[in-house]
Image (cartoon, rainbow, N blue to C red; front, side, top):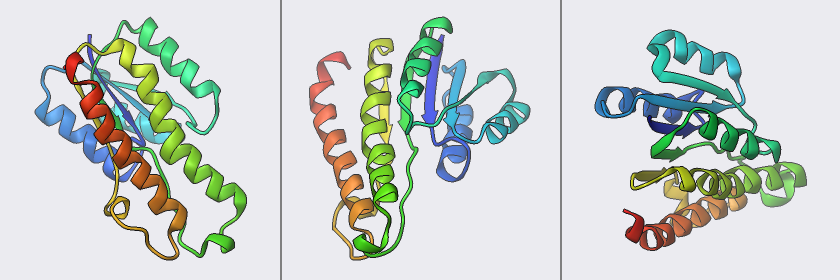
Length: 169
């Protein structure tokens, strides 16, 4: 079944992406929505029905990616749209943000994008990948050093993948 995978789907842009896919992509029969907050994912299912497949995962935990892979296999998904939207930022000078929070930003904003994309690519034969960046990806900003750097990474990765994956359409 033609499937969309949307990370960070529990609020903000993630919910807006869900609405846009439902409204504009009639070819997609299933939307796997991923976020930590399970109750919000189940709310989406209540609102939009069986097209929504809630998959509560914390993408900063290694086991999440195996679970995503198993779900894609079990559900016989043909991923035609991947939206890497999960992410977060903390405002403050680098040395005032905890080492844990700085590392978590890198893990979610960079590593999770890599790993979700890597898990989904074998299930894609053509299709689209949207990686949510930020205007912060274009220029470093004080009090946002780690966040801006992670978003610059996502922009660079996206540009490289665009070229690498052209033969796969």
